[in-house]
Length: 366
Ligand SMILES: CC(=O)N[C@@H](Cc1ccc2ccccc2c1)C(=O)O
Ligand SMILES: [Mg+2]
Image 1 (cartoon, rainbow, N blue to C red):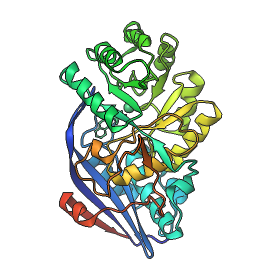
Image 2 (image 1 turned 30 degrees about the vertical axis):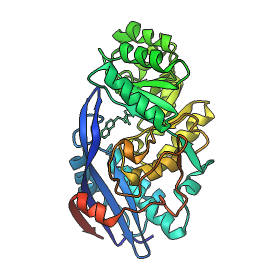
Image 3 (image 1 turned 90 degrees about the vertical axis):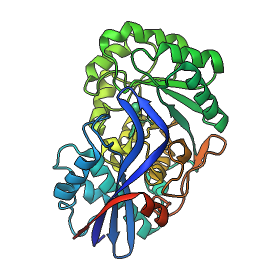
């Protein structure tokens, strides 16, 4: 496929409510979008990097610079998604930047062939069950109100952000208020160390589905040690940046569940490789979220429909984060989101909404 030009666009999207995790509080998303233009189609990719390198080492301005100086110039004049992955492989890291570019190429390629992401990736379902990620709140009553609201919207699984000082009490309160049958898990975003193992073992009393990324992203061996000292299954997020990392984590016993985020691992092709590897080892995967707009959300929902995605993901409805999405909103129905069936990611930005939230555009000719 010939690429005639690539646009990088930054948009500012206010969040419907502050979203607090162990690494900080977000009130808006500063999103980098990539649009690949070819003679007969265009494709979109969303870079999930935050404004600041707080979740991982990547950040939006850095991703834009990596794309502008290294990744986009490395693309051959004619390329497809597989060729894009090969062309970008020599550059170390910058996986969210690479993911945005590879996804935009894949979207353009599939739109011109008429195939959906779901069909291309090997989806086994037409809708996916959805969980929701609930931030750290100022008080337990506020948390319980938020959880009650999400359960009444139909979310099938609750994930609570935790950190030292906000862990046992919120989990206990949710269990006492909503009972033992609500699927419940926690995400520490790497806020603990192995010395906290006796404290984290107290979460075992609450029958959680999993504890996500309790320790630092490079603590693969320590996660294996922790997994032997608690009964709650360990799930990794930040630690898994590639299929190799997934293989190492499974071999070491560092996790028994993986949160798969195409943005974190460099794109949907690598995400599928991790899905296939995990499935071969009997390790469950679920689709994580990075507060994506409808562009990234559409592709994530297609991925979440693969057969190995056996746990509800953080593929929440658009309204969980945005009052107005840049695409037609993803709406929760009976706790599920429909998998887009159209060519490519199956959704298009609504131009006047996109123009309203755009803070900059940059056109790179080829
Ligand atoms: C849904 C969820 O919990 N996502 C991440 C954390 C996270 C939280 C806040 C974010 C803000 C801007 C961009 C990415 C972000 C990712 C996680 O699973 O660990
Ligand atoms: Mg996480």
